[in-house]
Length: 126
Image (cartoon, rainbow, N blue to C red; front, side, top):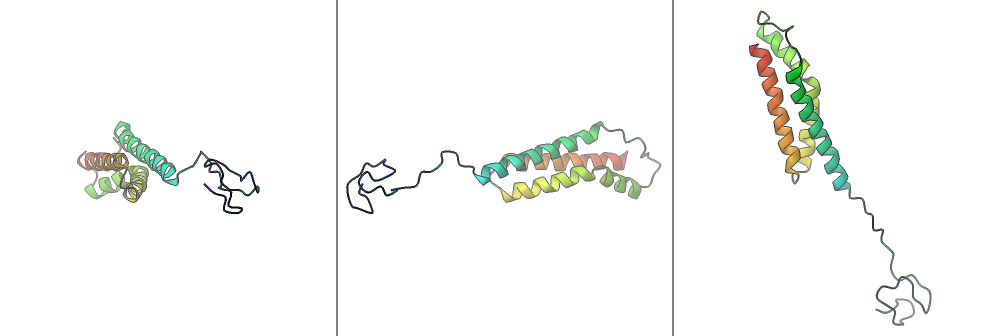
């Protein structure tokens, strides 16, 4: 390799020309943070939280919605009951659709959607 300033031959791995002192190439940091990796981790965490939130709905007592209430009241109760899980799942779905390469987020989101719909169905027929 040759120096761009003085034209003398320099080592390929040289950072500075030994003849004229000009910086030959910028050093790159070995640690590079990829925004895509950070986004993938964040979206995976949101997907896991959405799935856990949806799964936890099955362990909460819903006996205050009896079979003597109207179906519309049960539907509204089910939607209100699952509103946090629905919000997290929508956020998870948005992240999963932005990054289509990460299939785990999409699978966790669909599991969460299935669990939410199952819980609303249980509340409606309960």
